[in-house]
Image (cartoon, rainbow, N blue to C red; front, side):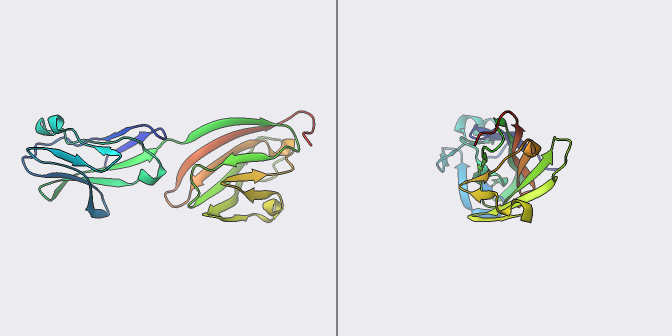
Length: 197
């Protein structure tokens, strides 16, 4: 299996590759091998903005690529090649972002979306009365589709907003990237206290 690197959102990520190469070393996104992100030869290195290779390390056989600010647009497979021959494949993943929210009944629940290309909202109830568990909504760009019992209560504002909350809405809400089948965010939600409306 190929190595993968998992980092927190906006952290730097180093994609490892160790091999002696006296020729040209290039890093590309695996499926876009003509778009070179960084390259080194015996005299120097060049990189696109947001990517970095060290010439000193290259001369020692460390061909690692550093991504200075890892975000969801950079989650993919990367390939390192020596003189046109693939030598390393590494995938970049972003750790799920977790937070807890406490609201009063009636207050809207706002789940910020760190990305909205193609995600689903999954709800797991913590209450005794299981209203529902499983997928409640999907988001694709500016399009929002929800289960019938949620349609009137949910809107999309680069966040998913659930109105008219009740203690039975408490639980774990998961934002999942459906294209990459990866959990992006987890919200642990408590709804308690006197009505907030």
